[in-house]
Length: 351
Image (cartoon, rainbow, N blue to C red; front, side, top):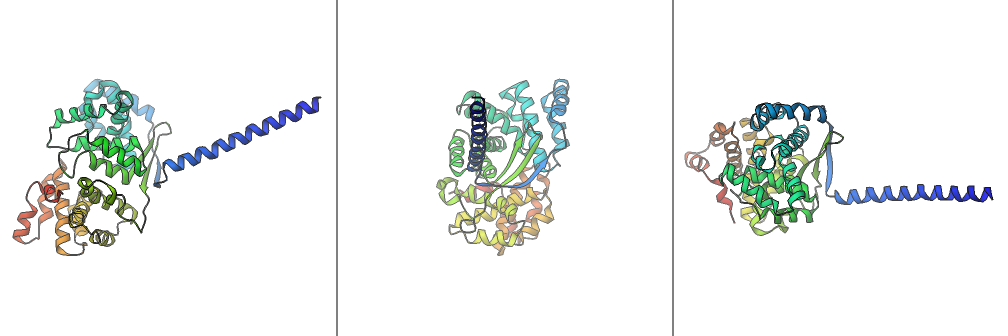
């Protein structure tokens, strides 16, 4: 009788182990299915303790106020790698939200890898549902008006992270963006969604780590998902592709120029070159000479001009670098230079 009981016990024990293994395998499979559109490019363990930093900056906010604390905090992390910036943004975003609530969304700014906005969007939707997006947009408008789309841009980043990395999730995020105000073609919610979809920073605050993840590249479909998105958003989508290609192709700018050149639709082709200048200015830390050098690698003078236009808009949009914007037009013929220096350049590419 004892032998039978022992045998039953062993059978049950083995069965439990087997079931646990099966569950683990399926759990990993489900996780892969959620992120099958991504490849991890650069996993980094951060060199600061979230618990310690949270206590330090919580006291700092109470002492000098949210805005001054944010400026001081962002100045410490603005020159760190993007993953460190992002996890720092999550940290500070949580502090602002817990202490001041939704009304302080505008404090987040465009630094810290938009991690601060990610927190506000995720927590707002979890508490108020998708209707909360309208409240976020209202706060953006009250603080910045419709002339600056950076706040809505941050909402776009947050929506893309909230919905996920699959193509179906991209369309959900773009639909949610319709509840926000668009300040311009190359700013605002949809611009942030496409940027986050192509190049993501995934944060694990419990483990104090973050990972830079890139959307997988298919040589046969290098423009995906742009041909599939609504016509009115295709310009934005194509303008964002160079950011992704830069990472995937490891800075092969001639190849990027060739990819833009092969786009059939004239407007989408132009915005691709324009977007190259925009994203490369920021990727190269607003170094004029580096940005100009990249634009000179475009296939012909007209495409170089479009790249310069994008670079100028990017410099003009940066509070600390806007004084350098006119230099993106130096060396051009007088008539072309005049066109380069005109305002509202993004309107040239509207469908």
